[in-house]
Image 1: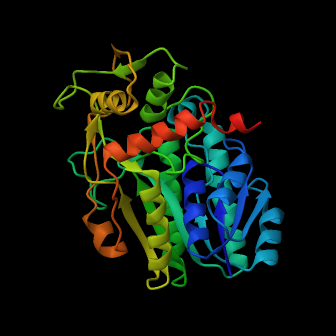
Image 2 (image 1 turned 90 degrees about the horizontal axis):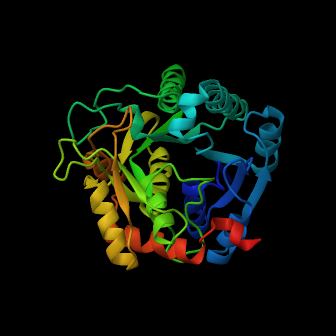
Image 3 (image 1 turned 180 degrees about the vertical axis):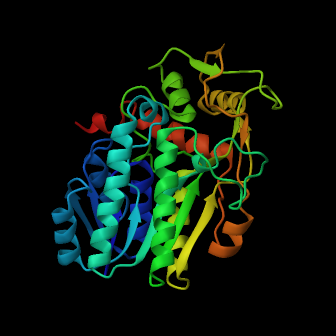
Length: 339
């Protein structure tokens, strides 16, 4: 029996594939490489042995998926594939709805056809919108402030409806907070196309000299230093959460959501200052106006995930930055350095 990982060449997907292989699982990855690089599979095979099959293709191709299920005896699916840039989703909403929703519907139809009913879905804390209170629990009100978040929320609802209609479905929805860091080997890590959208890879690009400075969007929030506070979770801890969720699906049917975070918040300036200390590099920054849609504080309540999944994040912010900096130094241009 094999595990299908959609979007397994991506940042979180590749780290999860490593842990699946280390656990002795047979893994099939399908990815169209639109926001990833095939070199990642060479790196994964350097890190760990194990049976890894890569199929290049689009998840909206039902015939391709059908062939994968026929060929590899798929028992369960971890679904990462999808566009994920908030700003791009605002300017190109139709592209996001068409890709993220249709790919998931196609996947579910093929899973249903082949009686595969175990699914771990890559959701996001963005489904909580602008939270009324923190820490955010799984019962906090749901909303979305951009098309990317809307697609995550829509898919969550689709999956909930599937589980309500058919008691055989076993679905874990994982709401990530802010994934950062890299594998300790420095062989795999986050490799964004163009200018990074997220804080940590942007800071790393400044530290390595590829970008001139960090723009800090707003210093007048109701936080200890006025800058936005977020829950940063090491990608390796996040990957471990997927294995814990898969294990949970062996014991429990239905639909359930879990927060994957640390339960702690760090400000933008905390991250910049800590990165400067660990990298021993100057990281210039300037204060810029707030961005529309940004919120002051966002961090998780992880009590339920700890109890239900027997999982919790282990790495602190210093370890996260150490591993991210190690990756950035070894791969200043990401996987393109392998060419």
